[in-house]
Each structure stands twice: as structure tokens, then as C-alpha cells.
Image (cartoon, rainbow, N blue to C red; front, side):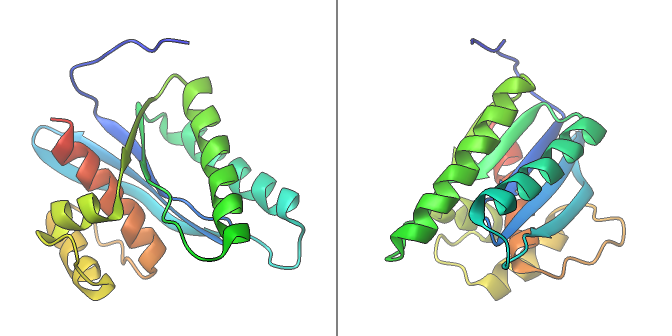
Length: 166
């Protein structure tokens, strides 16, 4: 399926993928200013089997897409670890997210952790603390406190997308 190319978009669903915790954010651009419409960290039940966890996470993302109708999906690329089981499960979550994006005719953008940190903090090796400090400075959060690092990472992915795809 081929998606129409647009020169710009106004609303992005940005995700820091995971199956234990998934950071999610909806960012909107009005003129030159970005605003945070929604952000959260979706947790899955550690006592459930992976398939149930995947279903719960993807269902929550699907509800967010239905409510906010984003035009693009921005994802952090998979960070490889020594734990192959975790990497495989995160890859499966990413596959389901890509499916949702295509199903909803969203443009798809992916960024490495280094690209995101460089875009938001000006340093590809920025710490979590630096990212947590910079993200609220770069967009209108309308008083929403960003408490979880996965949530902050998702917002940073969206900011990177807007900065990179102007």
C-alpha cells in the first residue's frame, strides 16, 4: 500500500516502544509551535502471557489513534540488548505498531536513540536527566507533568520528528 506524500503534517503519534512499558505521546503543531496533547506510559500486566500484554498495549494505542487521529507515527528504533527475548518481544510490538500506522494511513518515521538525544538535548549521549529537563522546555505541555522517562522519551521522539521532517 502506498501512502500519499504530504509536505508536512500537524499531528504525530510518537512512541518509545516496549511491552512492559510503552511511552506514548500525541504532539500537535500549530504554526511553528509544538504542543503536547497527550502523553502517558502504558504498562502491561507482568503476570500475563506476552500475547495478552501485546493485545493490551496495542489496544490502548489503537484507542489513542481513534481519539486523536494523528497523521504520522514516529518511533524510536529498536535498541539491541543482550536479552534476546526482550528484543524479540519489543520487535513484535513494533511490528504491531507499524501495522496500525499503515491501517490508519499514517506516515512512518523512525529515529535512533542518538538522533533523538541530539535533536532534543544537542548531545547524542545525553542522560535521561538531561532529556527530562529539556523536553518541557521545548514545547507547550499545558501544565502536564512528565513523570516517567518512557513518556519523556516518547515526547522526545515526536519533537525529533517535527524537527527532522520540516
